Image (cartoon, rainbow, N blue to C red):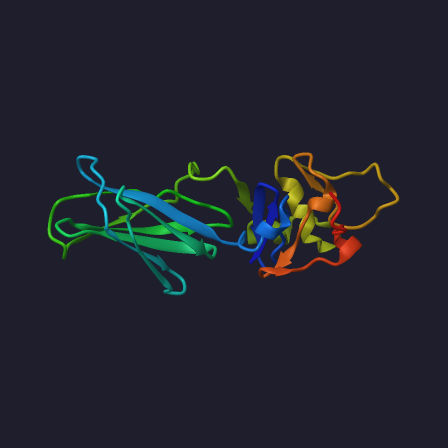
Length: 214
């Protein structure tokens, strides 16, 4: 997967990961997402210590956690993909949500209101990932494979796909600097762009405008 973060904007492509952000030391984990939520009963009262099982539907990798005293939970460091979330608690019917899409820096809130019942009974609900991301201020986008194949990219340069997003501009006034990947996010300097490949630093000094200037 290719994931690109432009300060507070990220987008994902297939094959490479590029990251652009303001504070370079914090870039190590931007190629993942998270799932958060609150577990309550039908009256709205929180359920502490409820069991939460998050499963990557493609790989079968399982993440386990429990809600805190306020009935809240979070599971972080999830690679992009589709996940299921199962919530269960003693004295309540378990509930399973499937088809939850996680993209780079996404943080959907998956809440449950469990019904009183038997712990051996599970209610399965298939639902789409919430469109409105209320748990993060980050702005992100996913560039699909068909777009990558069909769009007329100059030299097939993947970084040009960042220009599809709002707030991304290319500085064409400095004709002396013809380096690729010269674009800025929401007014930030081009030298604040940072690229990583599968989570590893993928910058080469002036080639990627990484002179460590501020």
